[in-house]
Image (cartoon, rainbow, N blue to C red; front, side):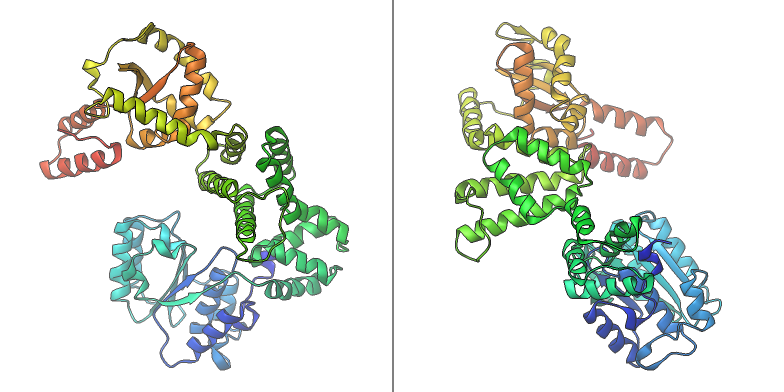
Length: 501
């Protein structure tokens, strides 16, 4: 069994977050226990484990002082062994719809099989739809006396205020290094692992406040034996990044050593680098350096990074790239593209390019974003739309190695004509258009298209009006009521971004 499952806390006293432990002791010692709890905090801080302990505490047959469950009665062991029918765990990420919550509301009326309370743990509750939240709210407003709720989330800002106001909130903060070391020592003692306390501190520093991550690192270290050397610790932790290494990488980027920075980055990925976590660490380090240069805080400076203006631009670029990691087709691509952009001095040129585009638009003075497709011309100078269409596959092929995501979006477009000096590309979905309209993506398409077509190319994106006809036809062909049809059309208009007449 994995360490993080094997050594999961089973009692309140075993919780390593001091504030949470004290909070639960106070709640469970009170005469009236809330019917709904909201556990808020980062991943790996013990929210679900605490919820299960709470389920034991409210149902334990031989409860101890301070509400501590005995962990020996049938109720406690049933929860520990995951065989209790009165503990219902729901993953909101997989069961996020109104039907799932309605099913919960129907079943909640049934009394517990053996326990005093049925306890419902809803993990990642922020993933519920608006309709599901409304259904859950009704349940929280009028709960049966035999039910308790524990809602767990890493993103409380996504919860409706009406839900939050009906729950008793417990905040789970990132664990301190001391709390992490204390937790790791329990595993070390039980597993008879030989490792230095200083090395446990290093693991704690690299666990980003997560007990689960800390235990996983320890388990990885003992895969080759239960005597763990400092050398082994350093080798494994190097894959998760060390500040000195981040500085080394940031200097390569800052000095526009693009090839070396990309090689360093990809080599780290091969060694097991966590890209999302690394992006955050890099931004945090850049922030430190910025505040250090501005003499706001005292930090270890990097002599090569010494220009506040350039550092600010680099932070903005890295923040944008890190935000795009989650939705990227290739996870490493946003950071790789950021490295290339910085090296090509696109950051320095951006304002000049935007100004140039605005000047061209002023000269043309178009009344709308783009003329209707019927008024588009088939030529721009010596370049005909037929020529563009014939070579469009080459444009896609040129974009692909630079940005797979943009190439995928472009496959859902087609060149339809010219509007003044602009090549007009028809786009079929609003969210595709919004993505492609981002300045850096538009510049990428224009640069590749210009090379392939051997002519200066500027592009504009035109949202297709054909989508509305398809939607209208589908609704008309089906034998449905006018009211339902109107709802479908309204939803389609929101999704596709077009007005259906």
